[in-house]
Length: 330
Image 1 (cartoon, rainbow, N blue to C red):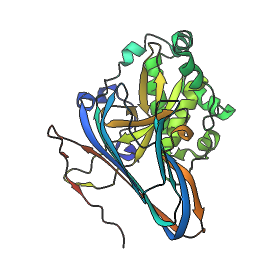
Image 2: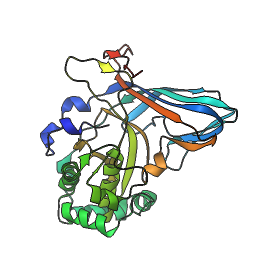
Image 3: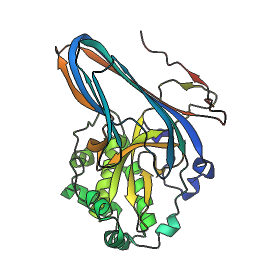
Image 4: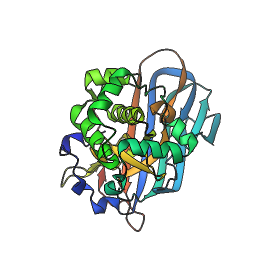
C-alpha cells in the first residue's frame, strides 16, 4: 500500500504536522484467508502479526482466531522482541483463515532534525559505533540475507549521501531520493528481488524501498533495521472507508548517536508518526514475514484474500470513522 501518488515530491519539514504526533488509539484487524480447490492435508505456518509494545506504542489487547482449529498453536518472543506465532493444522481442510485483532495506543514524538544535525553522517556513524549497544550496532550494520551491500548499492548510496552531510539532513535526503528516483508499482518485484535488481528496475513496493534505504545507511556505518506494521490511510474526502482496504506496510529505522531510533518512510516521503503501528522489526523482510509456511496436499488452484483495517477509535473506544463493506467481484 502507499500514499505515493498523493504525496508532494520534496521532503518538506513543515509537513511534520503536529496533529500527526498526537496520541491515538487504533483497532487493527488483519485477516488472511486461503481457499483451496481440493483439500490440503496439513499446514505448518509461522506468523508475526501481533503489534508489539515499543517506545511509541502500547498494545491494549489482542486476539487471534484460527479456522480450522489447529492441533498446535504456540507463541514465543524472537531474538528481536517480536511476538512469533506457530500453528500446525494436521487434518484435511479446504479453507485456512487467520484473523488477528488488536487495540493499540500510539504516540510518536516529532523528530528533531536540527538536533540530529549536531553530527555529520560520518560523525554519527563513529559515535554510534563507540557508544551504541554492541549487539544492535553489529546486528543492524552488517549485511543480511535481503540487504547485501553490492557495488550497485554502494554506488547509489554514494550518489545520495556524503560523509560530511549533517546527519538529520542526510536522513531526509535519503528518504526523498528514494521516493523521487523510484516508482511505486506492485507486481514487478517479489520477496527474492535483490537490491541490485531493484536499482535496475527503478520500481517496486514499500518492502523494496525500505531495504534499499537500509542498505544505503549500512554502507555509511549507520545501523538500520527493517520495520513492518501498518499505516492508517484515509479515503477521498466525503467517501467512507472500505472494510479491509488498508494493507501491511514497511519502513526503516536508523540508530542515532543518542541511542534512540528515528523511523523513515521512503515510500511516502516522510518520517513515521502516530498513524503508524509497529508489528515487528529485524534485519530485513525475512526476519519479520507476516505469515509463511509449508502446505501439504494436491497442487490445485487456490486463492488468497487479505483484508487489513486500521481504524481510529474515539475516547469511548468506538470506531471514529465510517466503514462500509468492500464489494467484491462475483
